[in-house]
Every structure is written in structure tokens, then in C-alpha cells.
Length: 166
Image (cartoon, rainbow, N blue to C red; front, top):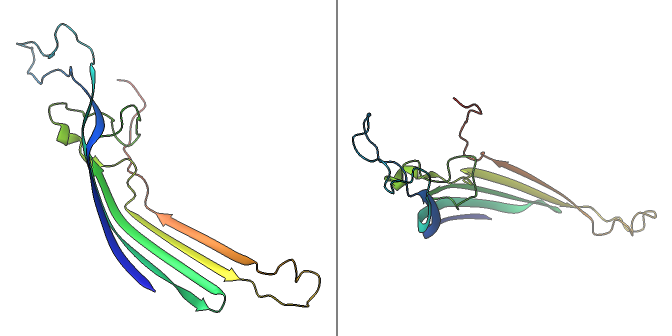
């Protein structure tokens, strides 16, 4: 049996956080005040519900009985998850949790930290043959099955980082 399908979703009003006191871009030397909330020159974390996300993907599934007692299931999915916010204080390793530029929040839009572009799963199940009347193991091994599962997938998004201070 072959099944093919697709799915899509959109999230709005997701929890987000950003630095409300990020300095305005300005040439050097600074002719004007750079911080919106002077005289404070430190971070002011603002929590809001302004984030958004989209997910779309396709799936294919192939299943059947190869021979009596042997059943397989092969499923494959290809998808993409994109968002512009990450739950505050979750600190994903693939990108900063807050927008790098508060004045361009859409500039932080990219692959979700949990995005897996492709995944294939193969499952096989074999019903062990029952040989009634053959020794003392026959009643113990009755209705036994052997199963195996293999999962192959692309990795999570990854951003190389340097662990040094300059």
C-alpha cells in the first residue's frame, strides 16, 4: 500500500523576548543619545507575543507483506520549519534566542532550532514460525516476533561558534 500526503501549519502570537533598550545604530562619534531609555545603558528584556512560525512538509508511506510472516513499513518525510522567535530563556544552540537587531525583528527569521529536513524510517517485523510438538521450546516461543527499526535523518540546524573572548 502506498500513501502520500502533505501538511502545513502556521503559528501566530508566539512568546518572544527582545532587548527593548538596544542602542540605535549611529556613526562614530555618537552625535545623539543612542539608548532609547536613557540614562539606562543596560539590557531591558521585553516579553511579548509577537512571534510567528510556519511548517510545511510532505510524507510518503509504503507498507506491505513481502512474504508470509514478513511485514515492512517504509516512511519518508521532507519538511521545513521556519520561525522568527524562540521561547524565551530556552537558549537554543543553533541561533540566538533574541533578535540580533530589535529594529528588524524579521531579520531573525530562519530555520527552527528543531527543524529536521528529511527523515526516513524502515520497520520490519517477522513472525517466527511455530513448530508445534518440537521439543520443550515450542510452547515458550509460540507467537514470538522479531522486529527491527532503522531511522535515518538529517541533522539539526547548526551554527559554529567560537569559545574565545576577544
